[in-house]
Image (cartoon, rainbow over all chains, first blue to last red; front, side):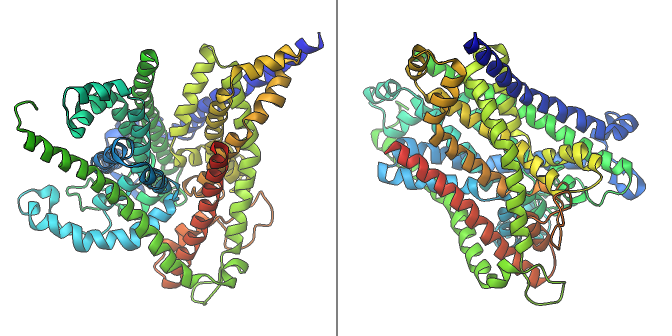
Length: 307
Length: 280
């Protein structure tokens, strides 16, 4: 009797804490919606596609921030993906044991550095480096023909933000890819070797083919992190609500406009516009994460069935 | 592949393997650069005053960040008081009662919450608490950080509890113990080490968070008089100083970054030592 009562009570308490996660999730949507109702009612969908952002004229459009977010995160993924997959392959398939432990520790340390420190380093070290050494390489070659690589570099701008983001998402993509690659059954590798494959042929035909969708999932999780990253980007992207024409132009992301302007926002409409950008950001990251998890799950489930 | 000569295949093999090595080295360059700069620029600005004095008004030499260092500990403390018990209980739910449709749904939402940008959590707490309470406060900052902590602690607790073999649970039940006692006094203690590791990593992560504090804890150039007041934190203080045009403030930002990195690393390394001991 007593035992059953205790068990029942504990089960109820456990369920309450489980439900708390759901309540938190619902509350977030409700509160963000409530906070942004002024702009949602006034502009509707046109808020998303309006490219004019001038708070002093009461004109609020999120388009420049959406573009800035998309370009900076894709740029980051473009840089980080090959590097991270290289790290994952190296750590699982190539590195000897005595290298594997310290190197994976160092790569994971990159994830432990607070984003504000990345921002500080970005302003004072990376931005001048991009202006003086990286930008000239592009502007003097490709820049003469393609406007995307032309124009002056102020140091801060899209490219610098992309590089900082790339460094920040590398440990995420590398560690998930590493897990996925480790789940590839050894029989796959042995089969490739038995057919006379070199090490790289084994990796590209067996390992990468098998782990493909998991690695794609890792990349999308990395992309999700890049989209939501705030402080480091705010400090190096230049914060200009114009649609950028070149990768050296200053730009703005959804997260960084909130970080930068929220405490200065004076009118109700201004605050509401920033909260609505937060709500959009919330939906985008949910969407991206759902897709990524499904991909990663599909691989790990697949291997469980093989076992 | 088959049409290539053996030597061409070997060249390709060496090139591609070489590229993975180069990629790994490339990723580690920023790590060393960051550490080098934070130490080189942070050390000169670190002295006793930095840890014992309040910020000085602009133009005056010296001053420190003691209020921000203490503030970070307070805000992270509040977040731990809420985030750790809630996260552990939710983790218990997922591992011990979550093998059904509702459990899988909550597990999925935990993943979703893990991916929510911290700035979004900041605005959420602003609308939820700052507007309601009529001002920025240490409480609001702590709650914002606890929302980041809960899914992380939930996930670790769940994973660690699932590692405990079922025969241990069955042994407890066979002795006639009720299930809740088995969970709280047998299963949970066996997973303590793993959970502590996860909790420490979660603390290390939220300690460096800036975005959720910008409009919850806000910041303060002086001591907070109560926990319902705006409070200075190390990351926000570093941000304010880093984007300022003044040399003295920028120097203090580096010193703050060094302090923050050292605290965060201590937590990370301690967490690792605990896991290492467990495995050896």
